[in-house]
Amino acid sequence: MPMLGKTAGGLFWMFRYLERSENTARLLDTGFRIALTGSESAEVEWESIITTAGVRELYLEKYDTFEQGHVINFLLRDKDNPSSVMSVIEMARSNARMVRTALSSEVWEATNESWMTLKSQLARPVSVKNLADVLTSVRQHSSLVRGALHGTMLRNEIFDFARIGTFVERADNTARILDVKYYVLLPSAAFVGSSMDNAQWETILRSVSAFRSFRWLNEAETTPRAIAAFLILDKRMPRSLAFCYSKIVGNLSYLAQNHVGDLPSLELARKTYDRLDNRDIDRVFDEGLHEFLEASIASTARLAGQIQEDFRFYG
Image (cartoon, rainbow, N blue to C red; front, side, top):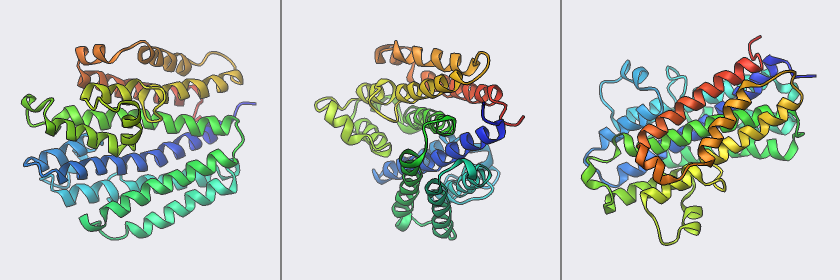
């Protein structure tokens, strides 16, 4: 018997929100690392972080400048920002409470502990001095919940919706965090291929915990093209677009076996995955990396909407 839409939606959004908390921390880490390089355009770079997070209009309702401290606290703890870490952790916990009977006690306890710890850490403004510790805590608590899910949950519909939520959010984020690079990160095209350019690309890798694995596979070639190929097309990299879509297709396929009728979301996911599977990085750069990433973000948004429609999350 197919799962009730409300329960499916609760699981999907619980894990989207948990992934978003980690991804926001990674995005902030990107901005902070780039700011440490001593760039003269630090405020422009912090502006790009706000734009990439998709909260530019909300931010400008509150602040006139993209000062480092304002950006950090807006993205971490501002309750007027529905995508701030504190906001999404509270939403993740709220959804977890709603579907608590579908979760193992370990998954619920890890989620609740994440909420309690981060609520305490984010009770006061976060300074540059303790930013690294807070960002590490956000990532670690996301990993705790994910580990509890993998270690204690049956591989059934509950697991499928949790994983689909995770990978839809992650695919969106990988495209966004890569787009930081080509949105306003470089002051001008003259810097492309320079040591500054390469250092910033390495920062992107470190911010998605991919630096060591990239170097393992590409010892002699730390170039923008190789890094973009790794984060977009390499199915071995768990944050790449290709990896995320392979998992989305897999979990939607399992759900389709128990679902009466066609699943337009599965067809949509397969089409997106096929585009990634049959693409090489030269074609991506020829088309324009920024344009490719914008299209990827739009495709993932359409897929998320179709999943909600197919499984009647609010029906």
